[in-house]
Length: 253
Ligand SMILES: [Fe+2]
Image (cartoon, rainbow, N blue to C red; front, side, top):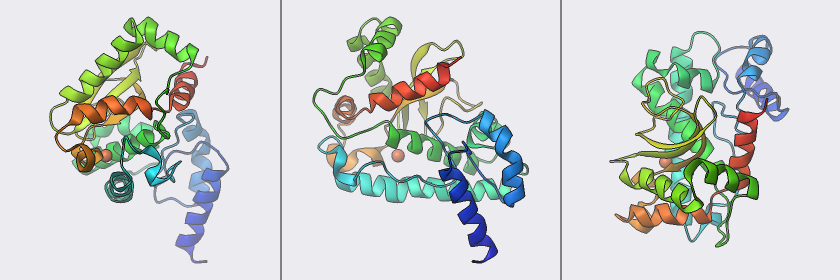
């Protein structure tokens, strides 16, 4: 095994061991070990975003009929793969000392537009895949999550309407979000392009619990210009269990 492959295998093994590492640069094994403690403190709980894509937790066809198989294959295999590749390139070119993905997002204004677009794109998609699960007509959040959403937005219908409006009215390409703000309150908003609410440059700030990709590449093959139909279908595939785990990890004392 050459040096490069050896390092890659170490990184893979370490990540699988669940040490909560979020990103690695061009450092050796000792650098990785040294950084474990500091990176672990900013671990994002159930969501670990490193420098490469994690495997999809379901088949390309699993989200049909809401999202068709070909869209998922191209979206995950081409678009999101490119964000991961370009994020890694930007990381290796620009990051001088070890930073995890959350640290880069929170200081993204000091980096290039390549970093902003691709670190954002990679984080957003890694979250997005986990926010979804195979379709169910009766897909609902737990009683606890329903209570939290109802307290924040009045009713579940009001929550869904506000989220759908954020997704439908985001001009051009972007994302709709359910986030926790600094006071741990649930908020809804949207961001353009591959920005997200963790970025220091974002006008809408928070910690994402649920994200919906409203770039045309996410829905155009099936829905063409009918973004609202894609958005309203999203509720059938939301992985509320994952959203709740994220919520719990960010609100734990
Ligand atoms: Fe996308």
